[in-house]
Each structure stands twice: as C-alpha cells, then as structure tokens.
Length: 227
Length: 359
Image (cartoon, rainbow over all chains, first blue to last red):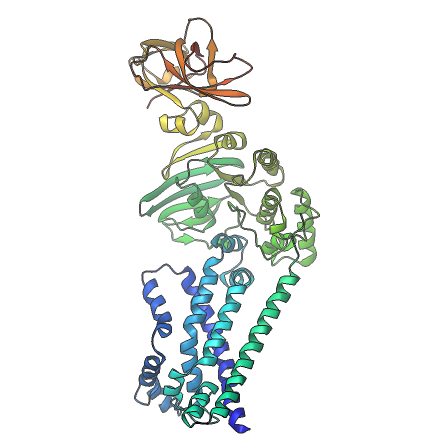
C-alpha cells in the first residue's frame, strides 16, 4: 500500500505547493509584462518562457548548476544549513520552473485581453493600481487565469525530467508518481505502474471536472440578457 | 476654469496644443489622429506630455517645469471614454459606486439615487452593461464619471456609437448636463454639426496643433485660414484679390472665374487693397436664381446626388479657366425645382455669406 500512497502523497504535496507558488509568481510576472513597454520586453519575455521550449533534462542540468552545492544559490543555502539537491523542496523548485512559463503565458494573454480603457476608467475614478488589479483586471481576466492555473497544475503533476535530475528518486521524499511509474516499469513491475497511472488519471479527471463544474456555476450565476 | 498646455513627441506625430476653457462646453473638433484624445488624456493624467501645464480651477495637476505630475487618481477628472469603458462585471449601481469608495454608505446610496434620477436611468441599477442600450450605457458612463464630483468632465467622442435619432436626443441631454455639472466640459468630436450644436467654444485641431480656438460663431463664420474652413465644412474655396473696400463692402476679383464679387464683412478693416485672399462659401449657402445679376454666376450641373430634403450638386462655373474645378452646393428641395444633370443654371453667392480669409 505504501508503494502507492507514498508517491501519491509526495505528488499531491508537490503539486499543491507548486501550483500555489506558480499562481502568484505567474500572475505577478504576467501583470507586469502585459503592460510593460520597455526595451527589454522581448528579452524578459523570452527568458520567462525558456523552460517551456528547453528539454526538461536541460532545465534539470541548469538547476543542478544553480542549486548544487557549488552553485551560486546552492552554496548560500548550504551555508544556512539547507541542502536543496535531492530534497523535497527540489521537487517543488523543478516543477515550479517547468510550470511557470505556461502559467505566465496564459495569464499574460488574459490580461492583455482586458480593454486598457476599462482599467484607465478605474484609475480616473480614484482607484490605485492595487485596487484596479483586484477589482477590474483580475475579474475580467478570470477565465484565462483559471485556464492558466489548470494548465500549470497539469504541468506540475506531469513533471518528470527536471525533477528526477534535481530531486532524484527517494521513496517517500522526492519520488513523485511520474517518477515512481518510470522506476516501476524499469523494474518490470507493470501492475504497480498501471495502478499509479490510474491514480494520475483519476486526479486529472476529478480536477478538470471540478473546474468545469465551477465555471458552469459561475456562468449560471450571471444574469441572462433581458431585451 | 481650465488651462492646458501640452507638447508631446511621438514617432511620426507631434502634439503641441494650448487651450483654455471656462465653465460650459468646449468642443474639440478635428479629424481622427489629430491629437484630440491625447489632449484629454494629458488632462486626466493617462498620458504624460513631454512638456506642459494643466490647471483646473486654480489647482495645478501637471507642470513639467516645476516637476508636478499628480497621479490620475488624485486629479478629480471625470472621463467618459469613447466606448464608455463600463465595468462589464459590475451592475449599473456598482459601476456608479466605484468612484465613491471612501464615502459613508448612506451617503453613497443617496448620491447614486440622485445620479440615477438626473441621468434618467433609475430602475436600471441592477442591470449589467451588456444588458443596456448604447444610450443607457452612455448615461451610466456619465453618471459614473460625475459620482466622485470631478472638477472637469472630459468626453471622448461620446456620440460616435449611436444612431442618428438617439444621438440627437442625447446631444440635448448633454446640453442639460450643464445644469447639474458646474465645471468645464470638454468633449471631443470629429462631427462638425455636433461641435457646433454643443460647444459654446470650439478648438479646431489639425495634425497635433490647434489652428483656431474661439467662440463657435467666430470659428464657423470667420475661419482664420483654409484649413479651418475645410474642417468646418466650408468646402468651396477660391483665390481672389481685393480690388475695393468701401465701409463693410469689399470687392473681390476672382481671376479663375473672370468675375468680380461683392462681399459684406464686418471685418473689412482687417484687409487692404490688392491683398491676395481666399474666398469661401458653404455648400448650403449657395442659392439658385433664374437670371444673371450681382454675385451671380452661370453654371452647369455636373453631378447630382439627391437626398431627402436637399440635394448635393457639383457645379461647373461656365467662365472657369479650369475644366476640373467645381463648386459644391447643397440646395434645399423647397427652394428649387428639379435640376437635372447637364442642365444650366445661375448661382447666387450672397454677399453676406461669402467669407474672406487671409490665407
């Protein structure tokens, strides 16, 4: 039983934290870049999306360089008594880096769709940037932000390559479901792999259905057009 | 009282304007892309001019020399956007209440009720913007802008999305708005009639500059130059030379027609003998007559487009030295019989309706 429960718990923990972190980071970056018109726009945009186009192993390698005991961040953290590589936190870091671009891109698209004059109207009515964002931009970009979150959730649930390189395969600690499936198949344990696959299918399906239901409820709450 | 000075350099466009407005309505008239909206944006703080000065009722909102640049939120400027920019996710009540954040609840309620009544939209407070007609949306947008009691109200092409009947009704309502709102109202339009009907003063824009800023009577009857004349619908312009000035009567020779015309102008003193000038007349001011006489030209109908109450004619003056020059005339059906294409006629250019421009 722990064969299944452990990867499931690791995955759930990682995915929850990753989705939350990605949600805020992605939205902050997207909001900033959606209205940013500086000269480094393409450069920053490219940098944010880079993990999406790179092979996960390349991202994993770069993360090892950065967070490894000789890397710039890894060294600092080690001095503070934290070792990132092969820790649970590493699964979150790897999954966040891989899920961020998709959260960022989708949310940015949604923010860009918000009519700039509507935000400007809020400002002329005395609303500061923070209030404009929470009361106008975010509600108007809600559908896109939900879609972005679902995609980020899915991406972090499926994360494999970078996680394996940075966090390794430690049962009960860093072994997420995708990694457990891979090693089950390597070991010839097809039954275990199948059960884990079914668990992933169930999580994905339940989450998607929940969001579809939520969206449907939101649509029903809106009054219909009276002519 | 509103003072605006704004300079802004953009690739391919430069804005350099200077405006003043008392209470009442100032119409900013000009073609699209002439900098009208940018002017409103610099008042509201939605755009920062490279150089400039904005003052409303003695309060300085922007002063590039003294590095004053109040944020949009602090400017107390009511802005009605071109397509109203209502908050689509909020109902009418919440739209209007948006600018009343720091007001006590019961005061908000009283204020919104008053605005709903003033703008003739009571009963709609529970509706969402997409459930409103264009006219209702406009009223909500104005109510929302007025709610925080701004010092100045800016309207960007408020009537561009409306059908003609509704437009006329809302134009009248905008006139009435002056009774409930005491500050300056600036409104941007590219529609001559709208500018004339609504503005007590008019500023005529042309590629980023103001070419005339005056009372509407002066702008429309005494355009300073041919650009203003064209912009204000005076489509017939021809070069002439002043050959005589006698009191208010000016004699103008038009070489292209080989004709001499009498013009009555109360600004005759501004002109001198042998001065080369531009003579203009609105298409609507040309009338038909059946015999030759003073200020009367023999013409032939070249094109005709019939309208409901009046018809547009393109007429060739018979004595014209150019084959390709036409006069445009809009002639009311009640004043003239049918005038088919290729027929001959006499045009009368009334001395009081001809306008002289120095350039």
